[in-house]
Length: 369
Ligand SMILES: Cc1cc2nc3c(=O)[nH]c(=O)nc-3n(C[C@H](O)[C@H](O)[C@H](O)COP(=O)(O)OP(=O)(O)OC[C@H]3O[C@@H](n4cnc5c(N)ncnc54)[C@H](O)[C@@H]3O)c2cc1C
Image 1 (tube, rainbow, N blue to C red):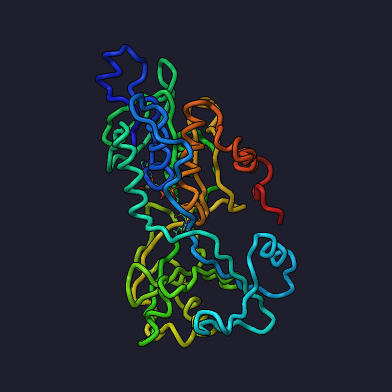
Image 2: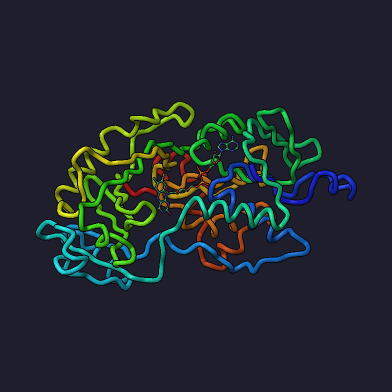
């Protein structure tokens, strides 16, 4: 849990009603960015430029493969400034694509993020600007404070009094919202796997970022994505996008994820067989979770009900939220502090798209079918 603002003693000495301006619960990328944005804007002595955005896009180069008949995707690829490429000549002919498929690249400025370091960086920056970071502190309750604001209860029994709070607890969001506000927020945890595969002997350099190998997504069945060989030399991460529903508190860490490794192996054998070894399966599997909404759009909203605008929720980042962390964190912080998000308004982003009430009487939310 991350608790920005001044220390309780200072608040009491100054006669303030609340110990903390904003309490942020959950310190993944969203909570850490929100805590950083809160502390940057409430800190009286230091201020960070509100436009600073330390994290680049998650993609360096994106390759898309699709069937030629998907006219709308082709139009989107072209209007985004991407170009179709002859795959046989790119990346040393690593890929084989079925006849009739189209491949496009877009090489706008981007990068591959080191997620762990990015989260640690935002926490460190938040702490530097006055946030109090409470590690290993599970939130078990949120209630209205006797003098307004909120009281947040930790599993240890400790209580924190804040003017506002931000809930960014990832795959645990539905459980927490159910217990605190009594309604169902459709954020479904999925058990997904990060799979590392051995690169065939002599091909190791071909698949590195240095040699220009791209981040890619293959949209089809299965939907597979990858980043260049980077963090573990000689291995490449090629994953299945998705996984079976799970309970975040009782996951099957060892074998959860169904037969995704077999599906990815079959994809590798069809599309990149000369470069990646599938015999024996992936050499490393890491268990992970997506927080999926039915329409794959985020939830960015006030909790409402008895909490009104005192509790802000950021959830359901549906496997594609990390790169948005700095902006989402800033929006959540502004909603908590000002009751509205100027960052979103300035960028012409319609937050109505991310409201909780899109699911009322409409379980699929923004999804068209
Ligand atoms: C395998 C994989 C690959 C991905 N690839 C990409 C990608 O290429 N690009 C991209 O943009 N996104 C990607 N994503 C998605 C991205 O990682 C997520 O959208 C993002 O990390 C969500 O961040 P979060 O802060 O909402 O949740 P989390 O990172 O889950 O953080 C929530 C935190 O809250 C804590 N918590 C839970 N309950 C409580 C409680 N009661 N009290 C206190 N703390 C609590 C948890 O311990 C956790 O630390 C990927 C996700 C996965 C799993």
